[in-house]
Length: 355
Image (cartoon, rainbow, N blue to C red; front, top):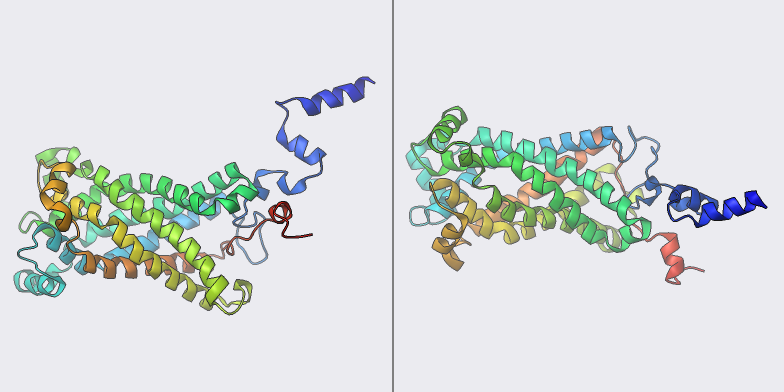
């Protein structure tokens, strides 16, 4: 009698471990947090070098972020320089071609590489946090939601995970971004990072490096949310409606082509949603003592869209290359690469889609 009564009380106890309860009622699919990861299997698959969601997995994803963001942003420094100059001085730099022409006349070919050092360092740190923390938050939020809700709310999951990651990524990026813009948009101020950073600190203190972090959040968080959510859903759509065979039957090269195409599509939307804030950041870092509100008022509704075409070309290419490099790093290190999510069997049964 007593053992039976105690067992019933244990089952009814609201503070009892869910693990015990779920295992007892024979629902092994929800027996632990790993099984809730609907975006990928938690176990080490054959050929993978580590388990999905392991410390090694997150660290190598962070390395992939460093390589993808640091190298690509540095490669397009000339275009970024012209874009920034169009934003802060549209009367002098009237278009992309005119901007290149004026810059070459005044500074020569070498002038197009101004700001490469803060760009490489800043965006490498941003890539580490952006991609590394995205994977961390995606697993964390997926475990919180559970298997079925992870599938139903996957777009919201991508948005929340990417926004959380970018919050920290921008704090890492802000100091180098401030130096980059100052070098590129103020001729004669400084030509190198070693010259620029001490000068900025002497003039304005530590605030000089972080005064642009709020508009940076305004620019980068919507950008990153679009970058990750649009990419994830575009990959899903391409495999469902465009690619003539299942992902499992595609070669690694074919999968990377899909990654590149989805990345470029996502990049175009990224550039559009984040461009107004990008214009504010460029002007803000150029002008001493200005606030984001003052710069926004000065630019006006039309001014914030100056340089959009250059940014679409730059960001579209950047985003496609970043996803391609990031996915290539995963392939090289044999990291788990989850297929597009599928509806859980339990949800199919609830919706009457299976017998």
